[in-house]
Amino acid sequence: MSADLPVDFWEYFDGGPLLEKGTDCILFFGGFGQEDAGKPFRPDKEPKDKDAIPEFKLLREIYKIDPKTLGGNKLNIASFYGDLNFESAAQTGIHAIRKHFEPQGILILYGLSVGGINALSVARRVDSEMKFYGYSSKRLYAVSDEPELRRRQEPYGRVRIDLLITVDAGAGRKGIRGGQDVPPCVRRNLNFYQEPSPDLLDLAADTIQAVTGGRRKTWGGANVGDSNFTEIENVDMSGQADHGMMAKMTTDRVLGAIRDALHRQPIDFSSGSLGMARRGRDR
Image (cartoon, rainbow, N blue to C red):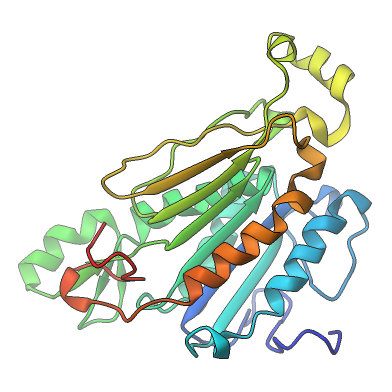
């Protein structure tokens, strides 16, 4: 690893240990990785796809974050190329979270392009498979386990994703474009997107590919969710950036949002919800 990257616990995701055990966790999904799809996105190895350089630079900046300046918790980072095999990518993300996220810490997900779809897939899996954390057993429980938790009278809290960042989430190759549903386990979703002109939206998919070409045939949209649980900020960048420019043009705001999420206030365990108690109540 380059000397200017202070985070020194990166390991290959090869079925063995991924990262050191710690508290806070960032899970990063880049854009479609072509032949590297689903593989580790290393901050010390420039990607073959030159279109991925902006997200590579963002990833390096994320690895440079010094958690000691933001509350002192250990920070684990797992990063992967986006994958059109959504189930495989979600399983990879869930595996990383189960091994390296302490539910009383901060959990942040980032996804660009198809990586945004991957991040959303992981969030939905968290909402169904890891919804509760038992204080006594120190285990994660699925939605279906809640009656058993109540029967045992074990204190438990909801596992929350403190920040989900989606950047032009979509998968043009699979016809997935436009806004997405955000599950209620997400506290805040910062969603950047761009859309083509209205006349282009009316074109057939094969015509769109011919007109726009490459990665520009993908676009995101305004996300939606339950406002009782999730704060969603949709940032429409249509006319300011095309799909290939989104990573570079959102870098500063993304880094600011991540630092803000990590610089948390003390956790209010009486609220019955785990994660960042930033607003003084369980949302």
